[in-house]
Length: 409
Image (cartoon, rainbow, N blue to C red; front, side):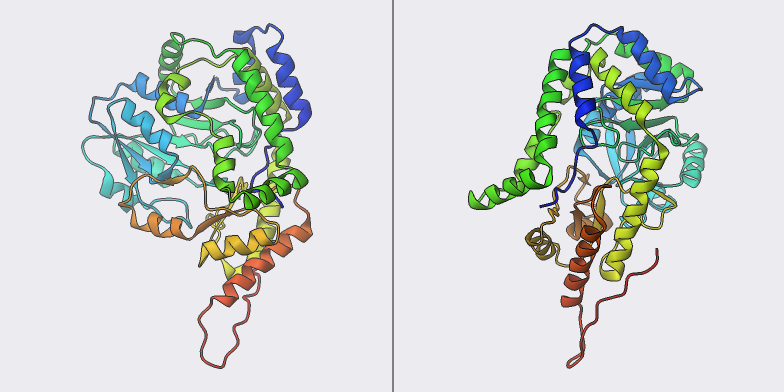
């Protein structure tokens, strides 16, 4: 069984992090190195998580209570919870899951005189050009906050220049993970200084907690290898357990009821040290290779399913979602063939009143995908999806439905 998502961290880095927890480090000096490594123009701001950076931004901007924050309509619920914690109103903006971006008209229909910012989320590893959205925000007095948690591409991309804030996550399932931590590109010096002042009043996350996290994910990383994950999947079937629920609970970070207490802390020295090491090791070629494999899988699928964001010029395929008919049946077929596809994810529509997204999420599944998957696995997965689509395609009486050919994307 090929796991739906493998942690992008190897045993040497996990051991490096554990050693860092056992030795005193100059936390301030290491943090400065992380931020200098991130950006030559002094925009880098290392912190505990993307939610921490958003909290610091909202604290520093101090929008009047009841102000509205426009948000990409599909996001993790915690981002909206942070907005609500500041007595602000999150306003989800509907968009097409295939293009991964709302239209200007959709944003305009949500904007009021109380709107103060737009939080735009790049999803699934795709990078959406933000020139027109940035111009719109600028002309209407809106801050543009860019959520790049799913869109790390290595050192060649630290956010769009027209965003006040660009947020990159290095949490457990993210690219170049340090199992926690985030780096924000904060382009306004006054805003950046105010965020540092607010954060300086918070306690520092201790290394003991981080060591426990490293141990936990060392075990989970071993578990997502082919044989152990196959045994886990078999055990779930024998015990009538929910594999989706087991995996989701194991990877959970912040408990929702303790969210604000958890995120209002400064990053510890061991986390910052591993974050620095992961940044130094990151190469643009790694993400180009992963993107190439993603396009190979898209070609193998052909017209049998729709691939969100496949038309974007820059896409790293951090995960590989597809939109398909009868997703539950396709998941069953894929799992029977050893591919752990799922519909479960923390990403979801932020409101039930988003017709485009609600309809798309009913058809959305995530395929197992990793840069190290063999070519045979990619082709076999594509064939299963094509066969599924062919078996459910409408046909005239007496005519045979043929599997759609794979396009050259």
